[in-house]
Image 1: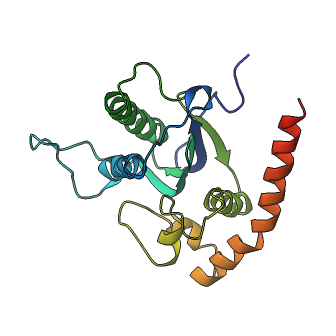
Image 2: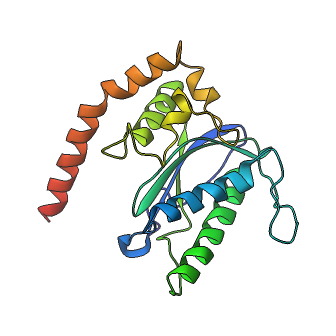
Length: 204
């Protein structure tokens, strides 16, 4: 039987919560440089200005097929909120980024084989309320979320990067301060849910 959220039937002009983790739950980011390299791959494929490789060849930009609205890179997993214009936008982005990152990681750490547990998992976001909550959930993923550099929270507040697209989510709030209040209001609840989840896992 397929795992939860593995079967993906995508629709154009739709939001998806996309996530993945290391095979056997192993770490996929072992250093700050690894996190930064993954971000550079996101920029490579989402930049509106073509990025070239060492031989001067342009990487294919997917900015017209898919937008990255939010993300958080943890130690053994990542979360993304994507809005795709084309039916295969998410698939193309994940295939390119995860393949390129696996090649980088395996070469750097002298390993072979798959790095990620699955190709990835995805959940359709079907309402504005769900969209708001998913973005908040992603930004709260790290315990030190206010200062964690490998997420998009600062892009929502004061560090806009051209390859990230928070506008659709921020458009649901009066201003950036209201969005931050929305995130902070749920922090204690999310931490409690995470604690309960760990305790239940330890009981079996």
